[in-house]
Image 1 (cartoon, rainbow, N blue to C red):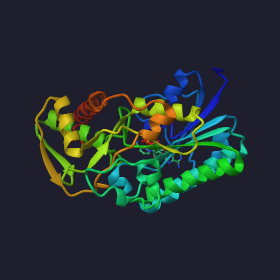
Image 2 (image 1 turned 90 degrees about the vertical axis):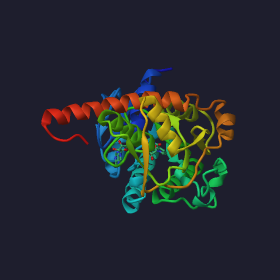
Image 3 (image 1 turned 180 degrees about the horizontal axis):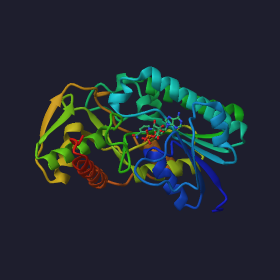
Image 4 (image 1 turned 45 degrees about the vertical axis):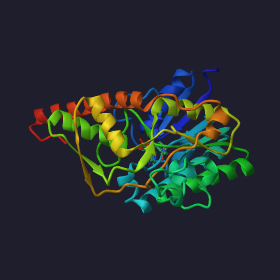
Length: 334
Ligand code: NAD
């Protein structure tokens, strides 16, 4: 591949964007990363990193200038606690980011554009049981996402489709199902369930207090996909000729209680699960990977156990570092 192949990753200061930059650099691309912030946990591998607010049109024009392909990952997002409580902010910010980024890409002559959508587009009425039927791409309609976050994702999916049909921009649309791994948000309110549980279990281990809080009864179900499979899948989809929305996730469903137990086992401790009120999202969700296998001739390969082991090790390290820093400063650790 030519090293002069120039690509943009938006959201490059965030979890998936940071890993994607590293993946694309290893493949030999020239990569520009753009985000409102630099990656929090380690240096970016991007050739160029611009700190820009992509809600603003002029910044989107700068960000998309001189690149051939765009991976659009920037979003105001977080776990259920954040998504279920900030509808206006999320819809407003993400709509502005996506409307401006794709139009700026078109005006700058970008050839390919990959948009990162979410399993949150799927209708609430198909996800009312823990033993849910895995979601196929066509199940997104008739539409009834649970949150504004999902409605905006659905709107931008359609925006991508119309830009492809009417403006000749080759768009790709991926629907992630719960991506997790190291170097993601693990504290502060925006973290998702795997990171939050790893943190809680690490705190239980290091403090000797075995109580771990779980939102709701913990019987809600999800599937979880490790970050390295996610970056591989994103790239394969970008290179494919498939323009419709495509699931990207694992199709092994576990309960949140089971997830907590798996993490405790990795940590080598017994925990006491304490069920407390909290936002739980839909009751059950799983990915149907039939089309993913057909289109990419591939599906995620890294087991949940393996992915959790790598993620837990990193989060335990962060918690230990936090405790050490707090001890030095004479303040209680978070
Ligand atoms: P993340 O929050 O770690 O990364 C998103 C990044 O976007 C952040 O670094 C944030 O600073 C940046 N951003 C927000 N507003 C911005 C703005 N106005 N201008 C520039 N940058 C801005 O999230 P992530 O998990 O890496 O998610 C990446 C993409 O994948 C998002 O579009 C998200 O909605 C989607 N997604 C993620 C998951 C998942 O499980 N992580 C699931 C479904 C969909």
